[in-house]
Image (cartoon, rainbow, N blue to C red; front, side):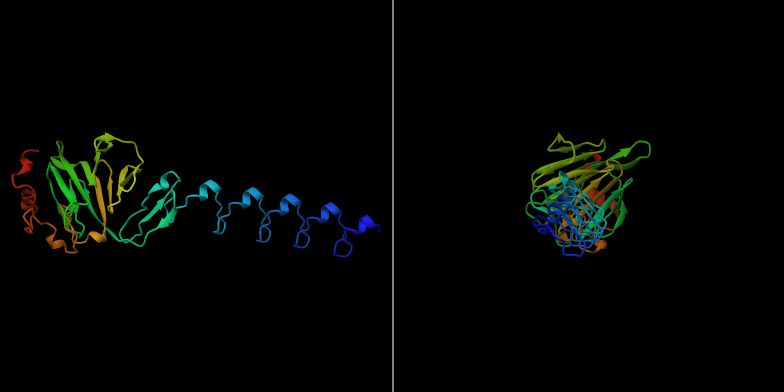
Length: 291
């Protein structure tokens, strides 16, 4: 052959390529790619992606995310958080479940396992304390549900105002108030949420204080003090607290000391068995007659 031709001779017998072709030779037998294609070679057999596609490859088999999608992936099962929402989100908090948080600047992180317990107010109204004591309590006033009572300055306080429905003569939750730090959060049955009396649109994030968001009919308040309040603006209210508050709480949700028998403790520290004297003892001057 000529000198020019001999400069490009394939190492395999009977195979000859032009100088242009020989600059890009696939290392796998019988596979040949163009120069542009060879810049991105997938190591998995029979799978080939373009340069643009190969920049974002999901590490889990058969799952592929776009660059935008992969920037924010919730670490807790069944929870997906958008980049805008990732400033501070607590994922699906139920008893014994990890509370996951993420920071928009630092990326997604997972906190150590934190066990939580809940108190609920349902219907007209039926209460279940943190320790599992179930009782009915009908009153048309504002009542403290729970508070950090052992701190000189309580880290939080949650109260609910009940109203009596004329049609049934039974009470239900009309509004919920959360005091966390120096911020007052109010949720009302008309679906409104207010911070210090000013109506806000959700989601709302106050750094190092609270995150407010919607989940279907529920408004969820997640505070930096370790509580989560869920209210459907109608007939269901739930308060969840971390177990670091064991033995520190007081209110209609009980003292959270793993003993349901002393949950009905009066304002004077007297344990009662009937909800009526407990109701009366909440206010020595019988505020229930005035509201």
